[in-house]
Length: 305
Image (cartoon, rainbow, N blue to C red):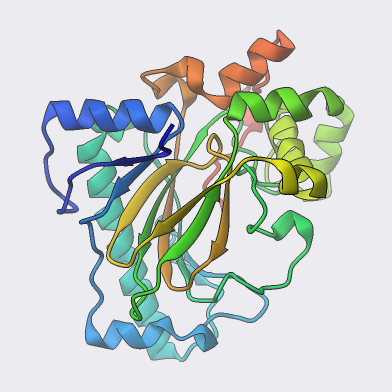
């Protein structure tokens, strides 16, 4: 099965036909990457200077922007460059919001904006712990920011000015991954949930869903034998293209590349057209019980930075 689903969209605020929207949403929710080969995010001449890796804090892998607070983090830049970075990422956020809202109109009222990221550092050769090594096949889950069953939808744009593709690899389906790693993971206790929150390891209570997803993420990355044996598909995502993926569902790895913009959105699993394909449904079917926390007073928004 081809993991890429090309969609002919060349305008960030275009209104695609209902047929195109249905085609895109079916592919997206069934674990494909919606590929937009004609959708370029254009930088001005002044903004091209912001692509220098020297502007990213050496302790960070990206520069990020919070659309809710307007705060930018991770930049080692002058005051003027900080303003330019904020304007650039604010514009990318608005463009991706327009794209997702028109390409997937049923999602519009459910969208929760997460962080905007500018990644200027070359992936290949970057040293990190195995948990942070994105060159290993994994599904996304966040240690500090529980999502409590929300989907993680990400929009990427390759803005490399040198004509270099971003190389990804994709692996097994989420259900196959879950069947392999879920039996190895013990349940989380209520005491552990509250201790993690008390000592500020997490920004909210870690739900059972987040506990299992995070452990699947970590076990996938840690298991060298799995990384070597799992069948992968290599993708070359060219400059001036964009793509959309549920990164909590599609097992993926970023192998090489430099200069990309990324926008994260969150959506409830109940907003899906095909809820049976969601990681929440798959895990609850396997474990035969609910994995989310129902008390909203003890669950903060997933968008905190």
